[in-house]
Image 1: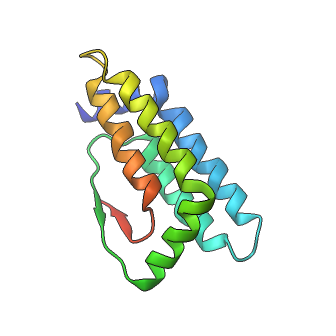
Image 2: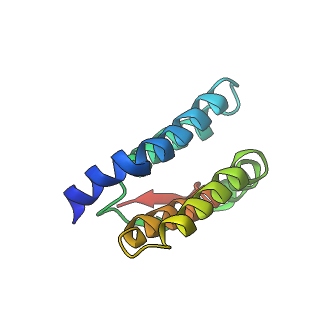
Length: 119
């Protein structure tokens, strides 16, 4: 399901999901202070473009917590809400459930991206 799922995902929603991470990364990189946050956004854009077969693990320390708070207040909540809405819409049909689950994975990542690693 990995390769076929990623191809279908990219066509039917993954491009928009990944583009939102790229736009967020560009917005954060405009400021000098936000460059580390912007680079993290670009890293997760790859996951948003092709999420099948990849897992996200969470960890981190105090710096990740501080970065997550800034991220959540300025960017994370709108991205998470959009991902949850799309996930719910896709889960209405049986065919859309795997894609909806990927949107839920991205919603969780949208709330806590710092300290997360993609494997």
